[in-house]
Image 1 (tube, rainbow, N blue to C red):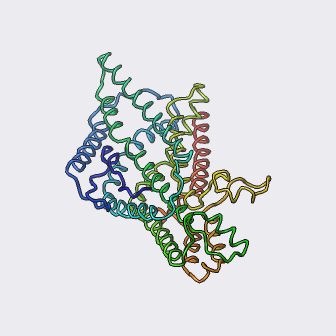
Image 2: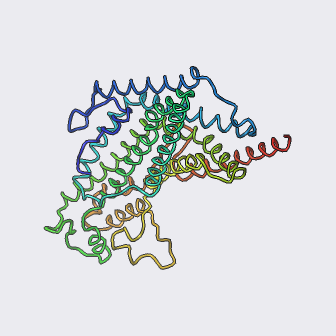
Image 3: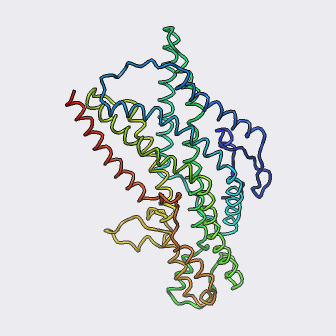
Length: 414
């Protein structure tokens, strides 16, 4: 976080952002080139999907021996997934007028963090990295299958237009999923870094002095002792930045909330049918196919979105990555994971005991802001976080049992 303006280039390339940044404060305006590309991409995607189902004749006949549940699953995954990708692009473009405010607020947050103690650089968590790999594998696997069908149809003189339309649709529409997840994960990561930036420099020495009931001036920096005006200024900046993190979080929910809700609602039946078809194919044919890559993609998407929010709310970090003060505070049998957002609030609560900090109520305001629970509420239906993962997996398991029961009943009747 170095006061830089949010980069929109990759969103523009994906055809998801019609705006360009025109000032160092993050002001945006509609750019003719990205706006035209967004319109062209959306028109081609919608036209390709309509052509696949309205113009191109069905070549059917394959899979007639499958059960009703299997046929429903195949139709759901093909028709539903393409419709979901198209709808996601439409929803994201309709919500794009909210993007300029997010850019401005995030730019302001970065500049605020630059005035405080800069935190160590943070990297994406394992869930986001797993999503990136799963997304790349799924895209390449599907693109390879569509391209192979197209080449085979051309070589055999068969109907090749369906496969060509699938390739065009896939290349142009797939970016909406990784674009949304990576944008959300990146903003959440910056909010985590901003939370850690409120810890003052040499805060270990400050706590040592509090414990020793020292009366000397607080060693706020290595060069000179802290003076009370500088302390008050630092605490005010920390409080304002914590309020700014809440504002940025509200902006990102307003911008991406509806498309995330769309992915969650669509992901529930997709996840159910992909797991079902994976189990059916594995039981009948003894092989793993496309449904495995789709199952892994949906699962990693669910984990990346919700665990990113969970890390922001609870700031879970390994003990060895925390400053050295905590190294000796945990016993050998205790959990090596700690909640550092609440822990940062405890730091300020203890600093407030110092004679030079106690007269400043803003120190308590900083602690209260850190202790205030953050929620990422998507409309009135979902609160993102660990609880959402549990709820979705429970529903998928319930529907999966029902689908397997229908499959067994259909097989016994046949």
